[in-house]
Image 1: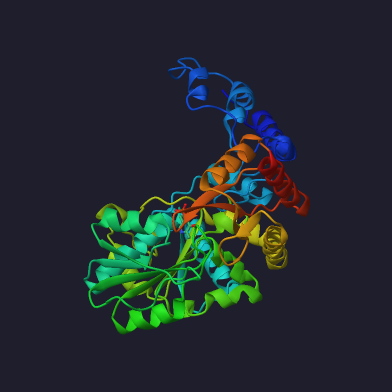
Image 2: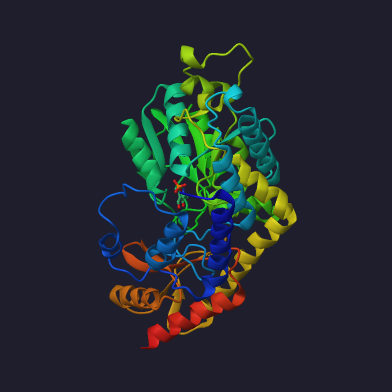
Length: 433
Ligand SMILES: Cc1ncc(COP(=O)(O)O)c(C=O)c1O
C-alpha cells in the first residue's frame, strides 16, 4: 500500500535524481529482448506490496531496460523533452483524473483545452478563428482529418508524398481509403502536378517529413486541392513548433489555406507524450463528422463536448501540461530553445560538410541532419550500430533512393553544444576503427 505523502516525496526524489543522472546513463537500453521479462514475476502479487518496492524495482530492473529519451545525447527519430513543469502537471492531471466526456464532466478540462489550443495557434501565427483541440498522437489527428475529409467530400482517396509519415498510410488503410503516393522533386518535396485530384478526398502535405524534414509546397498543393474540392490536411507534427520563431515561418507558407493542421507539442514543445494539437478551419463540418451524443450524455446546459471533435469519448486532462509549459517557460524561452536546437543542427551539418569522409545527403532543415560516411551502406550500418552500442549517443537511420542515411535529430532541451560535439567525436572514433 502507499503513504501518499511519503511515497510521493520518494517518487519525486527518484524523478529528480533520474534527471540529474541522465548525462551518465547509456542512451540506448543495453539489454537484449526478453531480458527484463525474465526478471519479472509471472503473475501479479496476491498480497499488497509497498510503493517503495515499486521504486526499488524501477531502479534495479526497469532502469537498465530504459532507452533514455530524456538524455541530452538522444538524437534519434525526433528527439523530445519532458520538461519539469509538464512532469508535475502530469502528476496533477492523474490526481484530478478528469474524464472530459462532456462539458459538465469537466468544465475546466474542456475549456482549458480550447484556451491552450488557441494560445498555441497565436504563437505559431495561424489564422484567427481556427478551432483547435488535443488528440493523443498525430496518427490520431490525421485519422480524424481523413474521417472528416471523407465525410465532407464523399470521396475515398488520399494523396500524400512518398515521404509522408507512415501514419497517413496506416490511417487510410484503417479507414478502407485508397492511398496514392506522389513522388518528390530533388529537394524531397511532394510534386504538385502529374496526377489527378478529381476523385480525391484529402491531400496531406507534410512540413518536416520524418526521414528528411523536407517541406512540401503547401501553398501550391492547397490551391490545387481546393480547386478540385479536396480537403487539405497539413502534417507538421514535428516542424510546426518551429513557427513559434518568426524566421521559421517560411515553412508555414500556404498553411493558412489548409482545412486542418496537426502539430505535436510532445515532439518539440517540451511536453511529454501524449499531446497532439489539431486545428481546423471548418469546425462545423468537423463536428458533424464525429458528433454522436447518446441519451445518457445529454445535458440541459448548453454543452460543448470535445468528444464531438474526435474518435475518443473519454479524454485525459492533456491541456494541463501544455498550459504549465507555456506559462512556466513563456514564449521567449521556448523560442530560444527551438533556435538553439536549429543552431546545433547547423553546427553539426557544418562539421559534416567540411570533413573529408563525410557527406550531407539532404537539404538542411530545422534541427535534423541527414548525413553518411563515404563508403558502403554496410559501413554506415555498422557505424550506427557501434555508435549506439557505446551507450554514448543514440541515432537512427533512414534510406534515400535505397542508400543508407544516418540521422541526427536535435530536440532535447538539455542538449548542449558539448553533447553535439561528443556525438561527432563518437561517430569519428567509430568510423576510424
Ligand atoms: C511528420 C510526422 N507525422 C506524424 C508522426 C506520428 O506522430 P505520432 O507518434 O504522434 O503519431 C510523426 C512521428 O514522428 C512524424 O514525424
